[in-house]
Image (cartoon, rainbow, N blue to C red; front, side, top):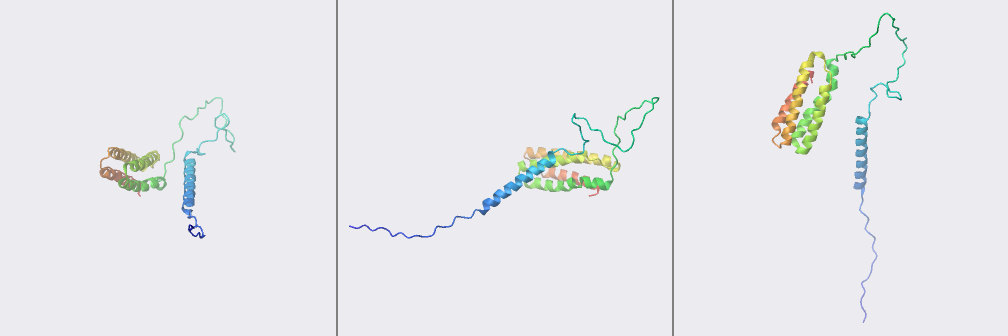
Length: 191
């Protein structure tokens, strides 16, 4: 008896699926990693604002074109113990210095109102860092008192906002209070 065998036919193999999505994902991850590393290097590497130091850690002497002053033996010289007062910045220069932080704050507060508590805490951290920068900025003498009081009020509102987020209570009132404090600061510098 003869058994029937199925007839075999050759057919072309199906093409492998394209994986361009994976390639773009890998490229995106590499670019993101490089951006993070670049940002960390930018913020963490020391700036060259300090005087150059010699091998033993002391500032290296700078060369000067003018001759060194000579002292007479009759008059004792006393070194200056206080640095000179920093120059009073103009309102325009100060506005340019703090403007970025003051214009970013309302966007951050809007973001807090629309995200979960973990993300909101990260945004509050950033806003608190900006508030410290605002506090460190040297305002013109004409607005110094109002500026310092306004920054203190803003920092206090951010602390209250953090407490509201941690307590998982409604944050709308705390966000509005912080927004009002930012608007006050913006008004002081004319933004």
